[in-house]
Image (cartoon, rainbow, N blue to C red; front, side):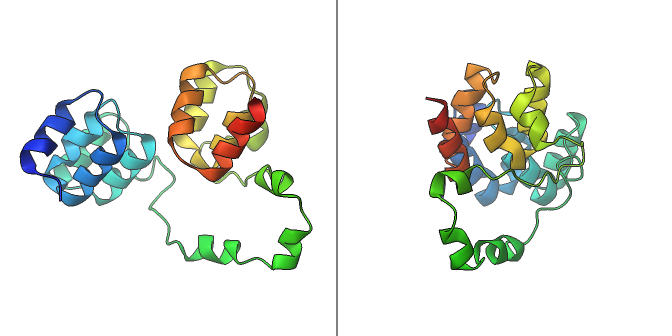
Amino acid sequence: MVDYDAAVAAVQDPNADPILLAKIAYENPEFGANVAVNPRCYPGLKRWIAEFGDDRARETLAQYGFTAEAFGGPVQDQKATAQAAQQPAAKQAQQPAAQAAFEEPVATNPYGFTAEQALTTTDQTQIAQIAQYAPELRACIARNPNTYPALIEWLGQLGDPAINAALASRQ
């Protein structure tokens, strides 16, 4: 459990570890609003706080335009993800690992962003919006040669295998 004084210091630190912020939000719901406005609070954590945080945290996020609905609705049960991962092994074995890593994701965001947009857009604002509001397309953003360096660095910090594979293909 995160010590109260350490939590107070972390939520006020503009360079706080995003993982520590997530742990603080989970273990200490009363800090949710403070975590949400920290510059190191990533979109997925904001979405989680918008759905599961206390009233103050949800109100704070709503003032910035972040609601659970704005992020694609409630966080979904992991059963669907687990079922997709249990596809027949024969089908997976037919595809080389690199090719399987670059299968185009199904866009599920309510904003209409597509995998093709994520792969080809040159508009830096749109790239940032896709990264923020369409997390399922982040691997495509990582493959887009027009993605700006700061976003590439942030994507690399997420620890997502598909994104890491896409970033490795850039080099």
